[in-house]
Image (cartoon, rainbow, N blue to C red; front, side, top):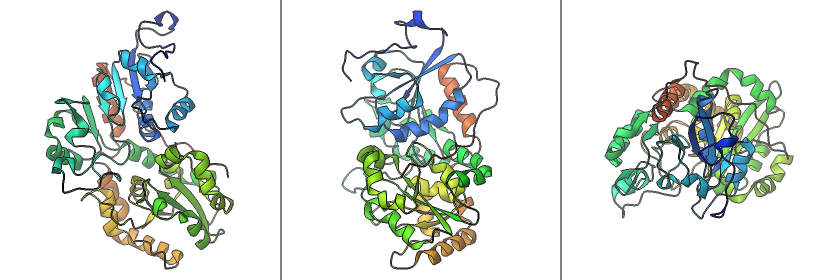
Length: 409
């Protein structure tokens, strides 16, 4: 996008003579990559039906844009402002799933985690004892992430768990006044979807009597898919098609970095063999609501699968650090680990026994959110506080996720 790029905008004064609805408060949603976008789109229903608010979108430029970002925004039909235009405009609230672009904006900002909370190690930042402790973990709660020249980058920082507040107090105590423990809206929407399990199973093509196995991988070379290119082919080869429906869910960064064409090409044999692949933008929660089993790595989707009640079999990821007390670390202790030199069906049966014996779903749900069922209410309250608007009287919508639309083979 060049500095001269400009679009007609419902925000600001330049094009107000075109506006049908005037005097609205403006909300800018920053989507630097689809991972942030998918989480922020969970928040937007909290603003729906409010004629006092106009929402627009932007992809903050920093010279290393994800290819999938603009396509993600276009697919949702919102007004997308070029970054040069967005950073020169005035907004009443900025919603962000990462810190990218925040230093160029002066509006009140709500920063939310874009996957399973802030308090976990990032796959590209393993602990390094050669650097100071506050910069060592790569949890997203360190001063280099939250502060810029002594100033907080966000006016409100949404945390999913009280554990994260304690971690923030150690890592970046300057940010504590901005911290709000809101719970996890992704988990709340997944929970709201569980009563519709049969509908999701039908959308995924699962027949009566079939068990749904979700195979999920995060990104990075240490991920399950990074370590095992034949991950999906192997599962399909071991599980009889008349008894099992195998569903694949890859982290959006895999799609964004390598491209949708390449992902489909790599998985062409698996798709022909019956793999049901959900798209990166949505579908993973619907798959988890339908799942009987989940085979996954340290990624957040594996934790959500456990919380949804699936029996979890873990793919080992040597060298991937896990932060004590997080869902990934607790799962690593309580769920069985897959052995590729042993038959898979007995290992799935062992995963089911471990789930029931250890009470894994209840355990992981308690680790994913300190405010179960309350996230919509708490996030909406925070957004309207920053907007300086009275909250609507209408109920807070936390709806089930849509039916999945699998990727075509």
